[in-house]
Length: 91
Image (cartoon, rainbow, N blue to C red; front, side):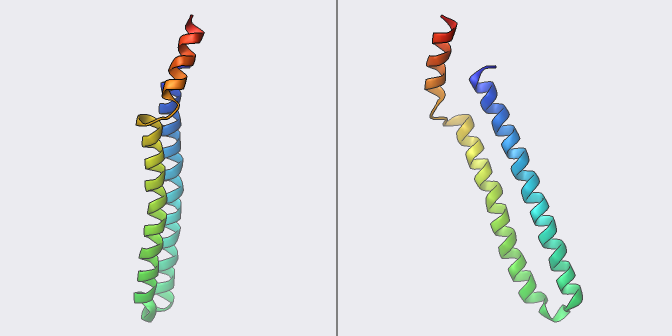
């Protein structure tokens, strides 16, 4: 398999796993916040603030995954090494 094909597959799988994990985390956070508000409506302001901060932290993980995937696709430091290795293999 060619190097760039493997890079595209790695970026795709990485983004899928990252999006899946952050989606599960955000769903759990919102469900627990709704449970907390339903048990104690007076604390809804504090719960909402803490939930939004937590969601921002969770979403930052998805952004980090996106940045790593973009680095793999467009700014891969091993691209030249792989091209040279492929040239040696083809000869």
